[in-house]
Amino acid sequence: MHREISKNKMGTEPIGKLMLTMGIPMILSMVLQAFYNIVDSYFVSCMPDAGGITGLGEYGVNALTLAFPIQMLMIAVGVGTGVGINALLSRNLGQGDRQRASKIAGNAIFLGVCTYLVFLLVGIFGVKAYLETQTTDPVVLEMGTGYLRICTILSFGVILFMIYEKLLQATGRTVLSTAAQVAGAVTNIILDPVFIFGLFGLPEMGIEGAAYATVIGQCVSMVLGAVFHHGFNRDVESGLAYLKPDRGIIADIYKVGIPAVIMQALMSFMTYGVNIIFGRVSGAAVTAYGIYYKVQQFVFFAAFGLNNALIPIVAFNYGMQDKRRVKSGIKYGLLYTLAIMLAGAVGLQIFAENVAGIFSLSPQTQALCVKAVRIVTLGYLFVGANVALQGIFQAFGYGMRSLVLSLVRLVIVALPLAYFFTTLSDAGNLIWWAFPIAEGCGLVVGMIFMRTTAREKLMMAGEQVTEREAEKYA
Image (tube, rainbow, N blue to C red; front, top):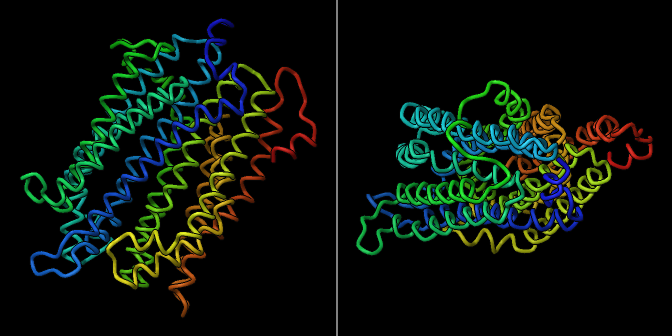
């Protein structure tokens, strides 16, 4: 068993270096994901007026904003399931149980197929009804329905890629998962203007062209992810026998995965709620929030990328019962995540007007985008600490603690506070303060949970964690 464990770099390399070598490819992958999310919005905002409709590009961005929560929900289910897979697979590899790890990988792919079938039904039957809960504008409704129906019916690419991505990450092969992500992103970026504006003799498809570019890029990532996993992932075995559903393994995956799915879905729920609440202020506020949200993903996704390295590192070394490396993983995970968020906050504060000016939007909407950046980035250090703490809780199998922290920062505080601000006379300025205030409240909860987690999980091999140690990691 010792020989099998020692072959995996997660059990041998210095943690600070390991966190960077695993994290940087995932950070680049996630930032690229954010880039091609915003490329969609940019090209859609540049659509020329047509059919007697003035400002068609801004209508399109509004439609993308309203459709985005469902896309986030697909990612939430895939990523949340992947978190359970990642933590469980890494822990079993750390324990040297390759046979069970192979069954976990096979069940992960089975769960990905089941997830796609659910969103296929959503795409066929539920898209228009969902959009009608947010808007009555016929132009926005038509554009949003066409875009979202394509993205859901053809969602097998994004869902299965997320499964393969987590399988590669859990075994330390982050470069391969990043290569697959990059290939899909580049494909999307190239195809966006071609399909939207009808270049090279192709028909002009408008916002539906953005949807087709997105799903084709996702399919490219999925195919490469499958090739890399089945062809190069030697830590686990592949084969049809491992695809057979195992109730025990599925239960173990979702013990961590369900809270993680809910936690990720809260971002979708928050965006959906914000779309409705901000609609009480103005349509421009909704569009501005949609643009800001995609801009902030550059920073948030970088933090999430590092978090994807933190989880398997801490989980693997916890499986090995190596207290020193677990504590080191917690320390570097927190430090690096805070550094990312600080750099992002400073950069966005400096270039807020430049970023908002990229998009072809009305002066009112651009001004609201700048205001959002100036205010919301003030809470980015709180965000960084919360993201790292959630990863630590997930690595230890405390999915519920991570879920509660997400509830506080994304729903329990943010949405009621945002609604309250809309009732005040200066709503256009005040609504943006709901986000940094909610993150600060979340950090208080996270620190309380971390104190308890340190006492419970850092007592390994008969060692007792002192009060000073517990406070240090709280």
